[in-house]
Image (cartoon, rainbow, N blue to C red; front, side, top):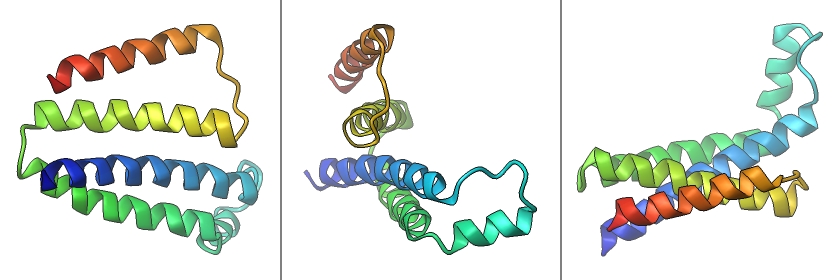
Length: 119
């Protein structure tokens, strides 16, 4: 039971990390024409990027625990596919990213695949 809780935490933390990174980079702005040190310090001082890094670190610890308990062939597909689904939903709801019908179809295939892998 603990392993499933930790797996869920790892998945959510990884998805949150990516979302925080996106929000942080939206606030930092484009990096193309700025000197590398300038954007590096802009990212370093951004609280959303800091939260993203913290979520990545905590998620890595949780994921390593999961890997010590179950097969990689099960853990990795669950981690990536469920995390992807969380990111898509949150991006659509909160970041106002557009989702087209072909993406919804792919999203439903991922959910079906997760169901098959988890059985």
